[in-house]
Amino acid sequence: QVQLVESGGGSVQAGGSLRLSCAASGYTYSNYYMGWFRQAPGKDREGVAAIYTGGGSTYYADSVKGRFTISQDNAKNTLYLQMNSLKPEDTAMYYCAADPEGSPFPPTPRHYLYWGQGTQVTVSS
Image (cartoon, rainbow, N blue to C red; front, side):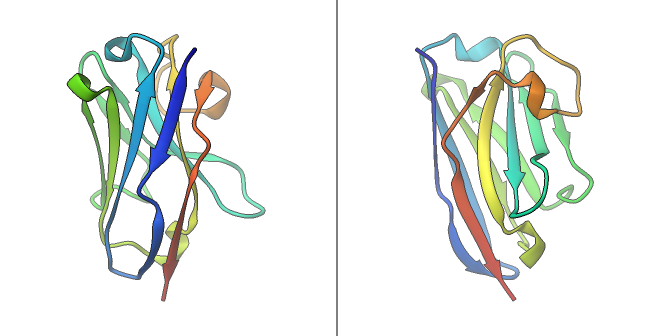
């Protein structure tokens, strides 16, 4: 059974940093596309970053380029999202997700089969 468990969310002031983690289990982690998505109240879920765990290619939404970094530790089956220079508009529930089919970037929610429960990120001004 595939499980994705996020952690690391919290409340920070603008300009601060957080690192999200996503522990994966129940499948062969090293050959999936993994993504971080976020959803703010009243808005659609959007893909902010993604990575191919088998080769390392990455994607970033324009809104987070230069501030967020997606990375992985295959030995720990863990995905990370380092978020720096956070802005109030980054406030959202953040989800990690797995796409076993390898759909091309940009990541779209309908292609991701497995989802974590989410972790809240709140950035105050």
